[in-house]
Structure formats: structure tokens, C-alpha cells
Length: 172
Length: 169
Picture 1 (tube, rainbow over the protein chains, first blue to last red):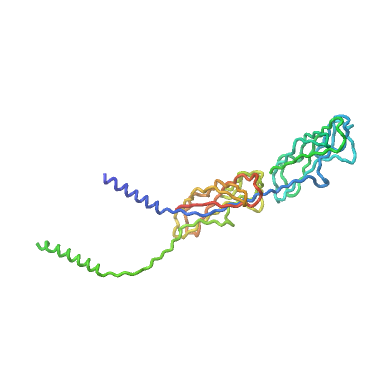
Picture 2 (picture 1 turned 90 degrees about the vertical axis):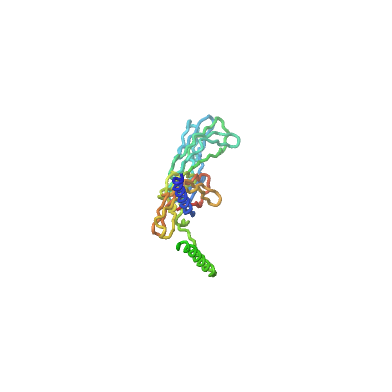
């Protein structure tokens, strides 16, 4: 029995000796990242003072709808209700500015609906749509977004200036 | 018979010699000196050797820089500017006489980077090799890549942090 035990003991001692010789040492590495918010959005743009989506002037002697597209074009369900005056229909306009040299990808979305009011009467605006929309590459500088929608004019809606708000959002 | 007498005499002679040796004693103070240095040191320059995830927009999630310095993930949020992504470089500085020594890199713990207020996790810190055989050069290097967590809802800014690298040999 002793003859077997001796070699095993010797092996164990050698193993212990090797463990004692192992050393560990630490140092520090470093990590960095730059996170930026390169896009800004503002209502309005070249040739526009406000950027308002403007349905123009119309009558309300009967119910009808007025649609303004994303190219300042206006159409109506009853053209007899449309009035052409100095209150020129216009698409909504927003300007997105990318301060980075390189393009930034973002996704444009717009509220689907809103309301406008003269303080007493409220009218519905639906079908709000933006151009461009969805996934968009914003180059360095300014990118314009135009917005259209459809106004539902109720019969005998009170005369007056109707206003409301809606949101355009860019996720990037 | 002669041998029987000789043995005690030899023993006595040996004792005498021993006593003589003990009788001559002198003592004084000597000085010993040693400088202990680590055979291997782990170094990384925060200016030139950082793991750099580069520039990205808020919202990037899971941006990876591998140990070769290649950036991936975060599609749609990555910005290529002069802030070039790179893997961290870790230097194993050592004396030439430890050449041939195999150094093992331990698992690197997760860390965070911060702009001073917000923090973003950095995970999957992975060395280019878990073992390095030291050469006769002044240092032998390996690189470390990692994964940056979600940047959504974080403020823009320069984020920095550090991570611990432990090697054994």
C-alpha cells in the first residue's frame, strides 16, 4: 500500500507547487461612445411663414368635405362650396434639419386626425398624411415635409376662423 | 580488537571538532535588498486604445464593435463621421525573459459608460484571444470588443467608462 501512496503524494505536491506559482494581474480598458440628436423639426419653411395646413375659405350652407393634398392642391366634394380668395389653401409644412454631415435615417409619422374650432363649433380633420412619410434618409441640411388632410364641414357650421393643431413626429 | 578501540576515539575526535566550531562565533548585520516587479503588466491607453462604439443617434440599441473593430447592429442609427469605431487594445507589457509564457485572459465583467448623468451598459466584452504566448517584444497585445446597450431616452453626449481586464500566467 505504501508503494502506491507515495507516488500519488508526490503528484499532489507538484500540483500544489504549480498553483502557488500562478499569478494574476489586472489592468483597465476603456470604452467610449458618442450619442447625438442630429435632427430638429420646426413648422414652416421656405416661402411659408407659419407652415399651417390651410383649407382656405368655404361655405357651410351644406355639409361637404375639403381636401388639401401635399402639393398645396385643394379639391372638394362640392365645388360650389369652395371660395377662392386671398386665403390661399396650402399644405402644412415642416422643415427637418440634419446638422450632421452624413445622412440620418428616421421614420416620419403624422397624427391621423385632429379637430379645428372657432371657439364654439368644432370640425373634424381626418386623413392627415405626410410627404415624404415613413422611413426617410435626411441628408445634411434641410428636408421639407408637407402635410395634407381632409376637413369635414358640417352644414350651417358657424362662420369664423377655425384653428387646431396636429403633430408630426420623426423617430430616429 | 584494534577496531573496538578506534571507534570511540573517532567519536571523541568528531565531538572535539564540533566543539571547536561552536567556540568560534561571530555575528554582524548584513543587508539584503530586492526589488519585486510584476513580470507582466496590463495596460491600455485611454486616449488611443479605447473600445470606441463611434457615433450614433439616440435610439441605437445593441451596437456591436467586434475585436477586429468592425461595427454592426443599430441599423438606421449609426452615423459615420470622423469618430471611427475601434476595438480596445490591451497591452501585456513584460520583460523579454518571460517570453514563451502563456497568459490567459479571464472573463471580462460587464461595465457601463456615462456622460456624467445617464449610463449605458456595455456587455459581451470579448478578447480577440483568451490566451497569449508572450514574445521577446516589449509588449504583446490583444483587442477587446463589446456590445453597447440601448441608447433610447438617453441624452446626447460623449459617454466614457472603463472595464477590468485580468490575466493569469
